[in-house]
Amino acid sequence: MHSSFATARESLRLSFAAATLLIAMAFGVSAPRAFAQNIPGITNGELPGEPALHPSQITINGNTMAAKVLSIVQPAYPKGMQDAHVAGSVILSAVIARDGSVKQLKPLSGPAQLQPLAMQAVKQWRYQPTVLEGAPVEVSTTITIDFTPGKPPRYEQQGAAIPLTAEAIDPQLRADILRLIAATHLKETMRDYGKQMMEVMRPSIEDSLPETANRKEILHEVETKMKAALESQAATDQIIMIYAKYLTDDDVKGVVAFYESPAGQRFNSVSTQLEDDLSHTGEQFAMENLSTILKGLCASHPELRGKTDFCRQDSHEHSAFQPPLVSGALSTLRGN
Image 1 (cartoon, rainbow, N blue to C red):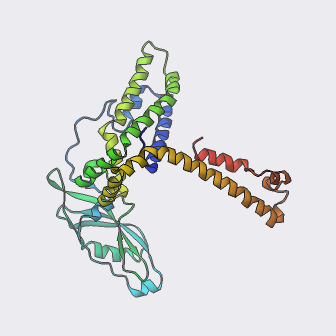
Image 2 (cartoon, helix red, strand yellow):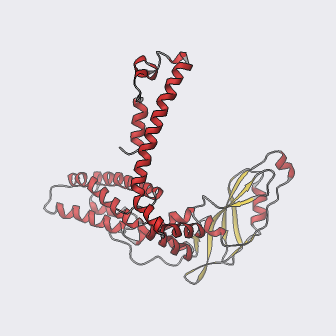
């Protein structure tokens, strides 16, 4: 199958593992329709219909809002504070008014002495007004100011809050993320993992259902609705919001340029095999070195001899010595 790059693939694997657990929990106490009502993107057992009313305030992550800043006032950073090593990152919760001015500010974290300095400066900033479906809206976001002695305060926006809706994301960023999703075949990856998840869970789901005449039809309904949920716009919107949380539009454009190239497509097609080989090689290399390290400890720390399994005499006779606990932990990490 086509696979996206390793991090997205691993995120999907973990997401579906969590979804599998939810399915098991749901069928332990309720019927399929009740379970469907708890699937994100499904209301009353059905896929979402008409969009919600136009909001007056939206949430946009800091990376996107950073591109909308028109003017910045640099926070003061007194030399006395720098000499005293008063430093750190101040994170502010902000509401940007419809005209682009900073309407509200509230400190979320950071050194108490630096919070007033950050707020005094940021309240004078101006942003490009945000327009949603032709109407200006207020924006809730976060602003991070990093104070480091010897350097001017630095405006950082990574790790900001995820947008509440995909529609709140800048249209150009949204369009470029959709290009990235297409270039990395991420929807195909989601569909394939969804099939795998249902294959694993089908026996448990079937066993949890009562013996009725339409038992097979109920099971089929669950599978059909899960497939529809994974292929719905709501699922795509969740992916868009995650990408928008961490990447700027320039970041996305750069990644798209690679994955749309022949080299990028080739890399994408073999990424699953690459990930598996790297995982296996990394485990093998770690275990070989761990064996050498532990043997060295036995030689350099006599107090360990006779008190640990890896310092037993017979363990030194095996070149492929692997402590059982460590070996088991690595197998768990690999998902075996």
